[in-house]
Length: 126
Image (cartoon, rainbow, N blue to C red; front, side):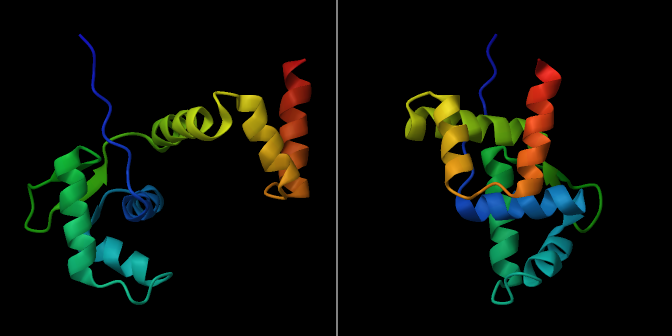
């Protein structure tokens, strides 16, 4: 039996997932409060609607045992990131992980500290 992966999240859904990964399971009110820190224009109704849509799509779980529903990601952060990365590598880099890494290193997207961490990981693999 094969399991169907949830659909890929939109940019707005990724933002909600990012907040939930930082907060842990949370109510729409808590997610909205966290969203206001970086997006002061975000209104509560938008957050609630996004969370409800994400639950319907299978991106979130929802605990309905209390009056205020509690939302949580349906998958671990690493799993979501891995799936998105696989898709990006296929679409943008013709399936080459090497091309992705080189683009990140050449494009200035990796700090000196991150480069040192990457080098340590590569040295560890030897």
